[in-house]
Each structure stands twice: as structure tokens, then as C-alpha cells.
Amino acid sequence: MSENIKHECGIAYLRLLKPPDYYLKKYGTLNYGLNKMFLLMQKQRNRGQDGAGLVSVKTDVAPGLKYISRERSNSSKPIEDIFSSIYSTMNKQKKIKKNNSLSWRKNNVDFTGDIFLGHLRYGTFGKNSIDECHPFVRQNNWKTRNLVLAGNFNLTNSEDLFRQLINLGQHPKKRGDTITLLEKIGHFLDEENDRIYYKHKSSKTKKQITKIISDNLELERVLKKSLKHLDGGYVLSGVVGHGDSFIVRDPAGIRPVYFYQDEEVVVVASERPVIQTTFNLKSKEVQELQRGQAILIKKNGKVSFKKILKPQIQKSCSFERIYFSRGNDSEIYKERTMLGKNLALDVLEDVNYDVKNTVFSFIPNTAEVAFYGLVKGVQQEIDKIKLSKLKDKKLTENQIKDLIFSYPRVEKIAIKDAKLRTFITSDNDRQDLVGHVYDITYGVIRKKDTLVMLDDSIVRGTTLKHSILRILDRLDPKKIIIVSSAPQIRYPDCYGIDMAKMGEFVAFQAAISLLKEQGKQDLIKEVYELCKKDKSENHVKKIYSSFTSKEISNKIAEIIMPENMKSKLKIIYQTIKNLHKSCPNHKGDWYFTGNYPTVGGNRVVNNSFVNYIEGKKKRAY
Image 1 (cartoon, rainbow, N blue to C red):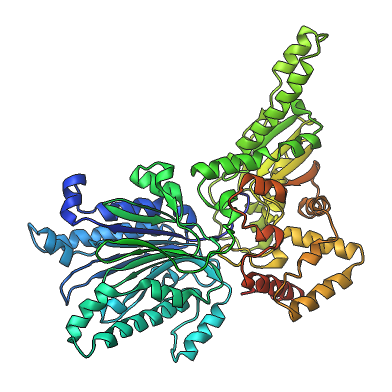
Image 2: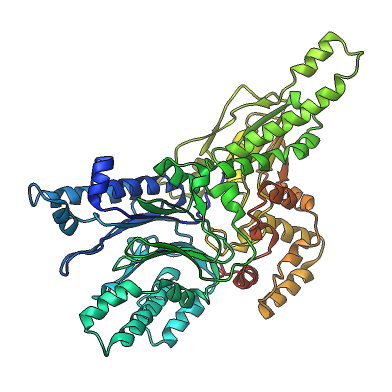
């Protein structure tokens, strides 16, 4: 992808269901769980580079001993830092006593627990301090009131939830989605503790009741009360201090989560192939958690699945399929291939089927799979033409050879260099250096060639304008066609992707420019007034309704075309129809269509437009 978009975080959960000696005998290590967590997190590093965190919870340790260990980092290599620190501390602790037993090790060495919860953070909003790194911990002297929480989520109504906490009499120590959720779930966890306590208060001692609470805590009840007012996309994972755990998904299935269980482990992650690789599994063995559903794992290892929220229409994030998730998932690979394949006809029509004078390439690296699909699609269309022409018996031998050996010209044109670092403060000088993030292959393009470059999406268009198009133009092609495997990004996201400011989208800029050129400023004002007055409907759709997608695409080409560019420029986008055809089970497409899966989404898009008109450069939720 040409633009670096921060997006959803990643989670990794692991519950060991056997005693430590089992893993030692079978796998030859006492660090089986910790080693697996390293793989689960390292394989999801694409989902978070602003920070990482890991918690380990021990069950059945004696009072006075530490049972929750946490390590977090916001360095440039957070995963490596976390695990090197953990292993270093473990080695020091093990040296305290020679010939230490398994029980001594569990009681005295950190990160030797039965439960692990890891998190990879991409900060879409707020500071990137270590305090923002998950997992968060709510501490209490009663184990069943301790709560560890990590998640992949964004809420559109966190201010409403914050006010609810205040109305309960609480005084949260800070604002933010995670701390608000931690305290909200924590409040109902306290209620659940109290419910069981008062039920047995008259007949049992406090110590006896503690054991009863541990055995009978109903996380299903806690989650139903905690989540019923949430608006957003989320996967939440939590561990209660005594050993009960949960993983729950939003009712529209916006955010992804997968799980696997057998007699040894329960494992959960944000991406399927991560679990497959870590545990050597087939795709069908790793299941997707259903929308509105929770996995509940009791302290004793019993696993159950409960419906926490009423499922809504499936609106899982299509951007996951286009760009965010790793492309080695079997389904995502097929979908990205189809996204490219479905663009083949539009591209061929634009170059008038002249494949001899067209070079196909892609913008590295995430567009690669869709590019393979585009090339396959082009080849299939060419083969159809070959078959039709070969029926002509009057063809000469040379004409037949030309047909048979006609293939798309595929070349590696763009090369992404290592990240350029500079201390130059002048904007002009820095922009000149940023323009060299990409390099090119020389000597392949002829002056009569059209150069087709596939990207997986175009959000702001700034990297294309200031870097990619400038350097591609040096090759002197007759024409450059930028092909996007995603449709036009027209609306902000509010469920975990860093695309919240309306004015930054090049498609929006194009629509506004067209309205002004056609003297339709009154429509802009009308939409502004509607957005201020009524938040329940997406009024911003009116901004685009006057134009076809091609008209907006042509205007985008004008906007992102660098000054003094010699080659002609064309932009071709994926259609919404072909997006759904390529990803039939993942129709969360609000950034393209404006059809938000929650009420809060409409509020956010309207607020974002108001902010744009009023010149406020801030997040709309």
C-alpha cells in the first residue's frame, strides 16, 4: 500500500488446560505457553507497531504470592523488548534456588501462569505512551474483583459511557475507550461478586464465600450488562484474577477474531493463519467467533459459548480483506486475487487491449496478491480473444505465432526502500527526501508504453502525488494508470481505522471541487445544516450523489497529478459491486458507501463533515 494507515490492533489469548509437567514431558519445555505467545504476537506484528503488552495469570497460588505478571513496551521493537525482558527476569528468578521444583517455579517465577493475554497496539487516537498499551489491569485485594482487559476496538459513544460511570458515583482517573470499558466491566463484575456474597452471607464465612464466588461467578451476566449500550466495533478479551476468562465480539462482527481448542489449549487471535502456523493446524480447524458471541473459559478449564448480544446483519470489515490482515489466510488470498481479477476488463478496455505496449506492475507490498489476480484476469481475457481469432482458418503462421505468444508484460517497477529518517526541519527539503521512499527499475519501459500500477487502496493520495507518480514519470511512459483494488474511500471510519477526518480523503476533495466548479455551493451549505440538525442519517451521501464514480475518479487524477508530470494519468477504482462479488461474506463497506453498521457511525460522519466546514482538524468521535 502506498499510504501507511494505522488500523486495528491485534489480540492473542492462550489458556493452558494441562498441568506444567504435561508440557514438559510432551514438548520438553516449561515455557510452552510463553513460547507460543511469542509466536502468536510476532505473527501479528502487522497489527500493531506503536506498542505491545503481555499478561500472565496464575491460578491456585497461595496468598501473599504474585499471581498477575505484566510487561509492556512502546519502543520501536515492542515485542522483542517484552520477551527479552521477561526471559531475562525469569532467568534471574530461577537462580534464586537451585534444583527448583515445578511448584516452586510456578509460585516464584513470573510469567509461568496458566493464562496469557497479549496485545499489539496501533494508536488511532491519543498518545502513544506506555500507559496506553494494553492489557489494562484493574486491581483489587479480592482475586475475583481483579480484571485484566485487552481489545481491538473503537467506540463511537465513549463519552456517553463515561457519563454513565460518573452517574454511578465513580471517579475515573482518566478518559479513553479502554479505561472506560475497564471500569464499566469492573463495575458489573463487582455487582456479580456482591450478588453471590449477599446470597451466602448469612450461612457461610467470608473465606468460604470467596471460594463460592470463584466457582460460581457468571461472566455471561457481567458481559450482558456491561456491553448492552456499546456502539462500535470490538473484540474484547479479559481475565478475572481467579482464572475465569472471556473473549467477546461485537454484534455486527465488525472486528475479526478466531479460535481453536483441544484438550491442551484454548487459543484466540485476530487472524486465522496466526493460529494455524503457531499450532500447525488446517484452516477448517480454526473457527471464527460468531457476532455477538462470547467464549467463556472457567478457572477449571471448562469452555462454553454464550450469546451476549443479539446478532445484527453481518458487517465484518472489508478493509481487513483488502489490506489489513496478512494475505496468507486461504480465504483472504482468494478474495484479494478476485479483487484484482475483477479489475482486468476495465484496465484492458482503457488500454484498448494493447497488451504489447502495456506493462503491468504493482505498488509494494500489500497489493501483491491482488496484482496476481489482475494478471490472471488479463491473461484469461486475452486467451478468450486468442481462441476466437484462432478459429479463422485464413491466419498465416506468423499471425498464429503472434497470437499464441501474446502475454501480459509483467515487470517489477516500483521498489520500496527502507524507511528514510531525516532530521531536516525545512518542509520543502523534507518533502524532497520523502519523494524518494520508492525507487524504480530502469530500462524496462518504452516511451510508447502504458504503465499500469496496482495499489490496494487510495486514501489521501499524498504519497502518490509527492512520491510514486513523480518517480514513475521519470521512466517516460506514454500513460500511467493507477488501479485501486478498493473502491473510492469517501467516508470516515470510527471502528478502529485511522481514517476519521473527512477533509483528508482525496475522493471527498474531488467531490467538493466538482460541486464548487458547477456552482453548487448551496448543496454544501444544505448538507452542513442537515448534519448539525439531524445525526441519525448520513447526510454526507448528498455530496457525492450529483456525480458518477468515473467523474470523481477523473477529478482525483487531476488533484494527485504532480506539477510538470509528462505522462498522462488515469485512475481506475474497484466498483462496489465487484467488491461484494470478491468478498461475499464481508460486507462492512461504510468507508466506500456510507452505510454504517451502527447508529454511532451516522453521528460520526455528520460530525466529521461539520468539523470540515468549520475548519476543525479533530476526530469526530
